[in-house]
Image (cartoon, rainbow, N blue to C red; front, side, top):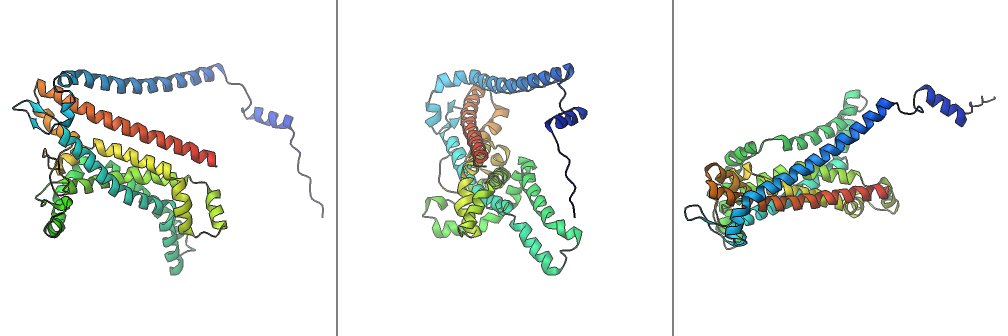
Length: 355
């Protein structure tokens, strides 16, 4: 039995074929103009974004200059906010912003990375496939595609959490979270009130309800970016671990997570920047009390909530003070976000290099 010889493809014939479909022709004059216009447009928008950020910073700085000259660095270290006596300082608000953000970040990271691992490793699809096979439905087209669709739906539902308005989270916290916390908070206060974290009763809005709601708001950011970092782990590293006798969970904990750790940390830092700037939900839940306390049940305040609550009734002098507070919040948020973006870029380059 003779095999027909495959037609030989020469470089000349490849060029002729490419010319027939228009791939090897030089770009026309209009194509070159369109390419230049597109590049110029991209550069223009990039410069516009940079100029817009610079303008916002300069505008806030100019309006904050009178307060900066009057209060100096004492504005950052004092604990009094009294418009009647024109005494202003924001140390309790700085404390409340950092304390609530770090607590929410810890809780959100714990659940966010766990959900990211669940999605990246396909545990849901595997479980559903096992159930479908056990029921004998694995030969039906709908049920064959159902596990992938279920995973896709779960990813979309988690990402949709970012689309819920902050005021809705705030209302949910007031009418659902706070009533649900009253009984356990009362128990912790009665039994462990000697600890600083439970030294006050939960009388209504406070740090703990704000932290719980804020951690839920951070879930989409941490989950989506952590999942991307875990999926980007080169498959050859996994195969090498399996070849050395590692189990699946040993591979996840010893190979996948450490390899994706830089990207996960970048996701956490970006979520931290998101938490620092959250306004409406915290303004409704944190209690808006000018105090410094470690208690999870004590009311507190944040910089964003202070700005939202004080601006509507602010006079000319208080506007300058609020601009000073806004400049502090803007500086903290910008530094955190730039640091997180840089970490994600480095993680992306490292994963591409590993491939």
